[in-house]
Amino acid sequence: MKALGIDIGGTKISYCLINEKGEILNDIEKISTPKTKDDIEKELKNIISKYEKEAEFTAIATAGTVNNSNTKVIGSTANLPSGYKDIDFQGLSNKKVFLENDANCAAIAEAKIGAAKDTKDSITLTLGTGVGGGIIIDGKLLKGKSGAAGEMHFPMSRTPERSCTCGFYDCYEAYASGNGLRRTGIEISKNSDITTYDIIAGVKNDDSISKEILDLWQHDIALGIVGLVNIFDTEVVVLSGSMGEFADTKKIEDFVNKNIVTTKVKIKHAKLSNHCGMIGAVLLGFDKIK
Amino acid sequence: MKALGIDIGGTKISYCLINEKGEILNDIEKISTPKTKDDIEKELKNIISKYEKEAEFTAIATAGTVNNSNTKVIGSTANLPSGYKDIDFQGLSNKKVFLENDANCAAIAEAKIGAAKDTKDSITLTLGTGVGGGIIIDGKLLKGKSGAAGEMHFPMSRTPERSCTCGFYDCYEAYASGNGLRRTGIEISKNSDITTYDIIAGVKNDDSISKEILDLWQHDIALGIVGLVNIFDTEVVVLSGSMGEFADTKKIEDFVNKNIVTTKVKIKHAKLSNHCGMIGAVLLGFDKIK
View 1: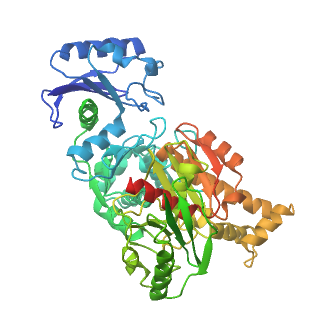
View 2: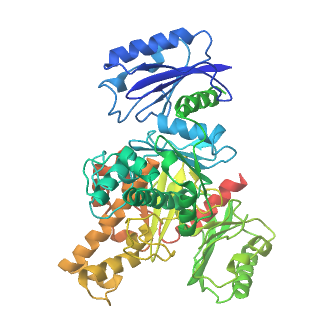
């Protein structure tokens, strides 16, 4: 059995056929994300109809919060055109269409076939421009009352120090993200033009300021994980996303295990590439049709 | 059907018969907690044998982490004698004996028959000398890989400001607890002898410093709840424990709902008294034998 997996991001839409094992079956195709809701709808309809015969269903990993029945986007999709939330995804296909938030899809994929395989409880942090979170408890995705669970917006300071994209202050996302690394970089280097790229390049060139910035960024990542592990007593925390590879999992694991009150946790890099979104969406879909 | 509920705390052991609805059936009896493991065992044996005919099973709410099969204490019981963890609780009865952490029991009781009744997702914070947490997801207690989930030790600061009983710094417990209130009181009043009682009495007498202290304590409580609600997208947060009544749920609810990215939450005072531990333990036991 196979299904069509689609990943809808702010920049591009990627898609391909994926089987029950989460294996990608053909070349991943990509298009730029259209600028209007109507054009997105039209493109999705084209993509879905192209694969409708072969695929059992369509599974979409999307930015934004997805409701508990996996049919509708209900929250924050800042990088997508207005009206995106109103798309009737099921209306685009004669077969079943499943939706899930991309960070949640990443967590499902890592838990089923990736770095958290063979565990029942795991948390996958998607460290990119922002921070996404997906939490697996007893093999099941934590969704909460409306589907919005897993938001990595918990305060890291009692007094306002750094604004967050969400409108509040000092959320984990404002420190542990790529953008958080840049802001920590500005604070330490006093250079307001410093970029994430500069810092990563500096570390590779053994620059002491860059290393200090990266260390503090990792410390912030670890602090948040201490809290998450005490709350969830999870087995594995997976660091995914474009920034995940720059975090030293060994260092973070040592720090976390030294400072938690619960039992030891493993910190791992993601095993799946940036296709984990569509893979996770398809694996969730297969769970749903069973 | 009825069961024997026992609550084992650092100061006293309370017990009584409780039915399937969580109703207390006789006068609650209390003894001082014995000072040695052997004496605790002896007393528990007496209590259990006294009710063994009438009770279907024994359910114990205890300090410390309880394993996932509800048979053994596996972690931190600072207020109980050494060796407490080694007690073979099942060995004390010919019928089934269930154990669960007291904060988790409170969460079960509030979720089933208390302030979070008719919800599937709730978090109960037990604000006492420390802070206990119990998390209910889809009607089930969150236990984690070893049973230790729900520990309210997540950092409230990126730089060490206040030590925590757990050995780490700036955990939620160090701010949101009764002891946290006292420490906030010392910081604001510069009076190192100030007690929790002084502050509460001061607020009642309209003392401005006391009100400032209580306000900051409530702000810290609310900050932590912002994070928890973003992580869990829970329906209700219940404030239980001896300090719970001093937190203004309306004020906290307004602050939290203004600053979360997930959907609105209700903040409520606990409905059950300090017998919620044994009630929750018995209700869990009835779930288990079903």
